[in-house]
Image 1 (cartoon, rainbow, N blue to C red):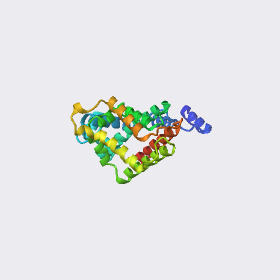
Image 2: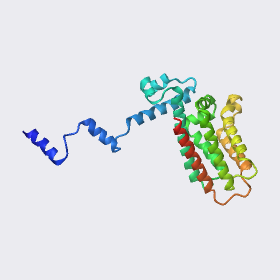
Image 3: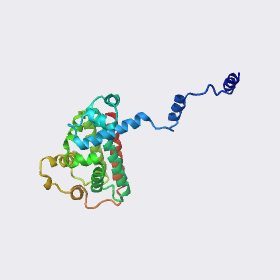
Image 4: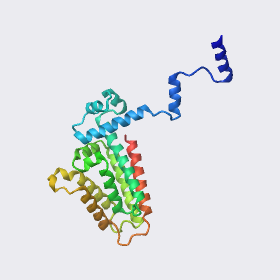
Length: 257
């Protein structure tokens, strides 16, 4: 009778029957009071994949290696990604977004952060602060090559198109000098990046300059090559153009995950 009265009171007050623990847990998750376990597991696997790529490179690292190191079953990884290429691409793209966010923070804090040579320097510094990007720059080109092999021509075309839009915006803002066609600038900047990644493969280790020397020299190269002698007093347009570029790249990468 006592139990029946309590049930009746709940029904009359609109509270309904007592909720089970799974129901309470689901409600808390819905309110954001508990982390999304699937998301946390995915991030742990991606962190592990990034660390394994640094240790072994793209070709040598296997799904079994990542699963063992992350403490999950191999089948769990396939719940998130269909194969090795998809997993590693997701790991590298995630790291790329982290580097982009770091770069944007550095640029925003720099009064001259809108200038092309300052953006290049901040991009290098942000990349070198990340172990996976540092591994790519310092001589593990197979990671970069593995990533590029998973990109379809459509994605590559979109990335190039966004880069050209960014360069054109800087040129209109007089942050890049007139007289150099936008496609030429985009091509040479891309070649410069790819060359930095692949050059350690073809020259002796002792011939490779320090990253500090390389960053400083490249920044000076960009300044002398691209920037006009008379710059506008405010480089905020450059910061905004970079933010738009990175946001567009992020959207493209997320669509291709």
